[in-house]
Image 1 (cartoon, helix red, strand yellow):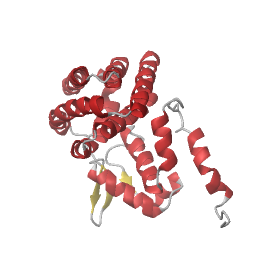
Image 2 (image 1 turned 60 degrees about the vertical axis):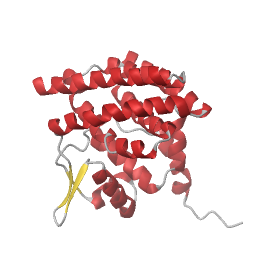
Image 3 (image 1 turned 90 degrees about the vertical axis):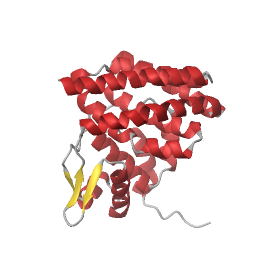
Image 4 (image 1 turned 135 degrees about the vertical axis):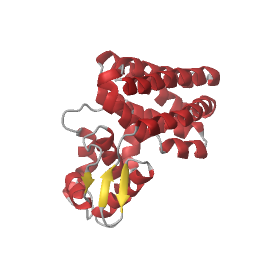
Amino acid sequence: MAADRRTPRARTSKTARSRKSQPGSRDVPRSVDLERDERDQETLTDRAYRQLEELIVTLALPPETILSEQSLAAKLGIGRTPIREALQRLARDGLVVILPRRGILVSQINLRTQMRLLEVRRELERLMARGAAERATPEEIAQFTTIAREMRRASDESDDMTFMRLDRAFNELVSQAARNEFASRAMGLMHGLSRRFWYQHYREVGDLPLSARLHADVAERIAARDPEAAAKASDRLLDYIESFTRKTIET
């Protein structure tokens, strides 16, 4: 058997990651097995993408910030190649803009773009909620039940960071359980932009407890294997998100 040549730091990094959170934030409860299991299997590029996406979505890296592969690699403790690959993925998501010979910028937040995005998102989310209710495995059903419970807890506690992380886990689980790679691919381009827009404005015009409860409703209808109820719950969630978006224009 070949000797394990990893350094002690490398051998313990996975454990350390599971115990740490961003400064000032609170980890999603350990009962959310989906996110933890995916982190156990993720590549360095996946890890860089996940961490950078959270920094951008939560405005720790605000719009028009100039990004450097070298500084990001040092900040996250990840090599420049995974950072570069993660930035390419973020560019496809619309969260960064790569300007030849000028550098990489965090993209601006655009209200008109957000409204156009919501037109497509409503139809896709209804389709995927229905599909997830029909096709989810027993393990996925259990994960939807857990996410719904933790969403309600985040609602009760008005916990924004827990909500944001649960929202991401929920979106990824719906995409997986719907078993429609074309819808999943299209939705993947919208999730980060949507969460960033919400995070920027929710303190002014948003209702975090209501948003969390509406997400919990969708998860519960999927867990109940009721496609039509899941689709209707998805529409109610998008009704709230559209109302929220329009309020940002009025303020």
